[in-house]
Length: 278
Ligand SMILES: Cc1ncc(COP(=O)(O)O)c(C=O)c1O
Image 1 (cartoon, rainbow, N blue to C red):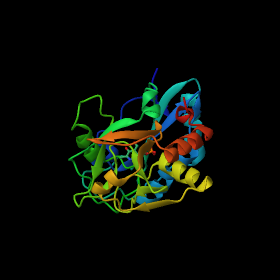
Image 2 (cartoon, helix red, strand yellow):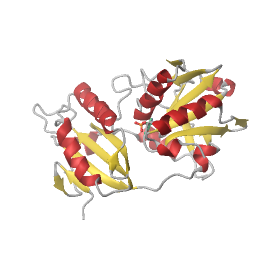
Image 3 (spheres, rainbow, N blue to C red):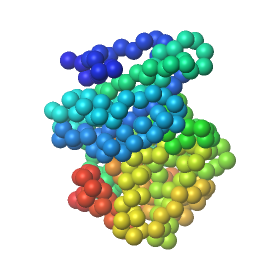
Image 4 (tube, protein in one colour):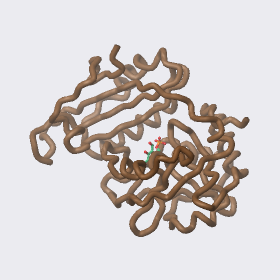
């Protein structure tokens, strides 16, 4: 059985001249599937369709994505749904086809729940030497071009280290290789500003909404990498994991503090059951 639908048809091959393949000319989403349900599907579609509009990639209606995704995941207890939307096939050369027809790929991928200790005790994180470049034209979007993240993730094999932080060449920390970053300083939640690079994560959006709901003050701002040592609490987020507290970066340790715990309780209340306390 094929786990992929390509333009609505079961299959697992794309054309060699698909611009998603030749130029990373497209977008993607990775969505948590839990008990046959797509978690925060609307938020993922918001980002995908806003991105398509911004890049001028024609996109089908939300309902089509919802129908195809619903069919794929309905019998799946724990998995990841990947959606890829590319500008479709085209001739050689960067110029987009005058009348592009996008390619739409939806795939159901197996998954394993992360260890509970990551939620309870937190994770160990390192700084990556691969920097993240400024790319204001696509900042915030989940574009297919992820080579910087690939290189950053290739920097370590030590399984005790769960995530690597990525910074700009001018020394501002932006994100993890697969996550958004948050700091708590004097009771205020701070997350790196993503105006010039980074992905505007769905879980980041949910954390900020939930912070506002519980009256927690938050700011998105430039975060110099050497300010992390002064943070009281640190955590990372993405759609598949929810939230993992950071326990240690190099020789600096952090507690799983009260703000992190209250946000985890909020996320648990929003349906991210992994974030529920022990
Ligand atoms: C570089 C990067 N930033 C942030 C995120 C978090 O995005 P989301 O919360 O939408 O999963 C991801 C997720 O894979 C990522 O790869």
